[in-house]
Image (tube, rainbow, N blue to C red; front, side, top):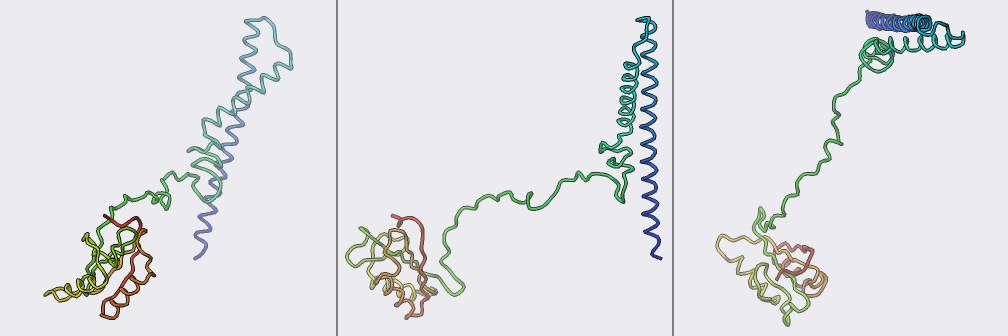
Amino acid sequence: MTEGPAVVVLASALDNLGALLTGVLAVVGGAVAGAVLTAAAVWLVCRFAFKRQPPPSVRKLVRWLGAVAGALAVAAFLNFGLGGGGWGPFGGGAGLGPGNGTHDTRPTTGSARETATTPTQPAKAPDTSTAHGSRIRVVVLGGPLVKDDAYFRIEGQPRPMTLREVQEYVNRQRQRPGEAVAGVDILVYQNSLDYDTEPVRQLRAWAAANGLSPAVVELKGNIPE
């Protein structure tokens, strides 16, 4: 039961070998025909045009050139060994081996075709709501933006606030009907006080002690005006 594939492969190899031998014989025949025809053409031209024959060395060279031309002509006709669709080990029809000699010209697909960059999506405004409630975002001020002990500002509000004012604001938000405050986001910009300074530590400690989840968010750029 296992002899079937082997027989098929052997038959295919024999067919390819026969086609290859046929191509070789055809090329040899073309070389012989080219030599004979070239010699005859030279003899006729010299006899009727020049009334004399060329030296034997010239006639021999011309015959060799004719043989080469004939062989090349037949090989080109059969597409022998030029990678096309005719006979030969490199052709598309009768090359040696189990394959059919054809070249796969289908476009390749893979990571090279998948490296096109997708359009950059515009940055979205931060979502301050969570599954358990909203988060209040407190900006840490710095430099000339700090007024006395007012180190903070509620995001979106221009007035600087002290720690006590921030605490009172958060408590008012928690007391509003239907308002659930889950935590406090402490926004630290490049020109803010450092997140490890005393005012920021106090705000984090107060938020944690009052059941509010504090989170320090470091942002690029300066504090928005």
